[in-house]
Amino acid sequence: MSDARTTVMITGGTGYIGSHVAVDLIDAGYDVVLLDNLANSSEAVIDRIDEISGQRPAFAKADIRDEAALSDAFANHRVDVVIHCAGLKAVGESMQKPLEYYDNNVTGTLVLTRAMEHAGVRNLVFSSSATVYGDPQFLPLTEDHPIQPTNPYGQTKAQIEQILSDQCSAADGWQVVSLRYFNPVGAHPSGRIGEDPNGTPNNLMPRVLEVATGKWDAITVWGNDWDTPDGTGVRDYIHVVDLAAGHRKAMEAMGNTAGLDSYSAINLGTGEGYSVLDVIDAVREASGEPIPVEMRERRPGDIATSLADPSLARDLLGWSTELGILNMCADAWHWRSTNPDGY
Image (cartoon, rainbow, N blue to C red; front, side, top):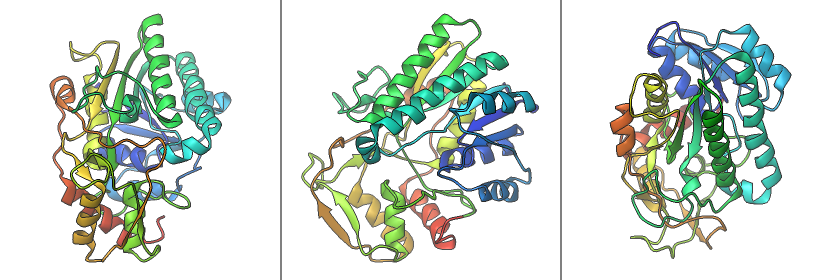
């Protein structure tokens, strides 16, 4: 799949991950179609992608649950492969709104997969998550760790993986790579695209950045009594630019690598763990701002430590990370400080 004329549809393409994947693919010579309902993103992202890459991607405004709209999008664009990033993604919110998560993530993927089948598009890279592993039985997490998510968000990702695996077993010609992300942070080094959640951010990095810019008085840390070096949760943070490259590598490996089965699940992480307080310290260093901390009790559904074994991605995809935690925080701060109100 290295033909420069290959056309890639990115669902959730104007979102945080999707926009960075789009820039990476355009820079590598691919044609890109963004598909998004704009529920948690801005159409202004398309202008920014054009500005960074020098090529304006095609855009289809559609919800992945709308089969007619998806059929139109496939009819209007000669799509070779889909990178499926669309979905709701906050663990805490999923505990409060499980039905919305199952409807959007699972139902949406079923509708998308049917539309792909009808359009004859059978190559898919899926935006999965390390939350499918649940509370780790061992660390670092390898892809053969039991699947036992502890929250509805993780359940939706696990169910989608099973659906896609079953489809690959049942239907000739399908090839799917599920990329189990660890914790994407950072922004494009240009400072022109980055994470811009609607409303109050649920994830650590955007919330810390908003404290650094003065939007909030303090960052809430959920639990300081975990079994970790400083008592706060430890995660494997990955720069979104490295993550974006992982999607391209997965797509290019389809059909070209003997090690890839018709369905493969692969971790994307660094193998390095940083605590919540480590991240806050790194943002303090990048921003020069004090960032007060407010400790609260643990949230339901959270775990102490999540850490990737990324060796399968290196072996099968030829991919490994290049950017560390200081790059992540510096680029995230560059984005937020130059775009304090987002897009």
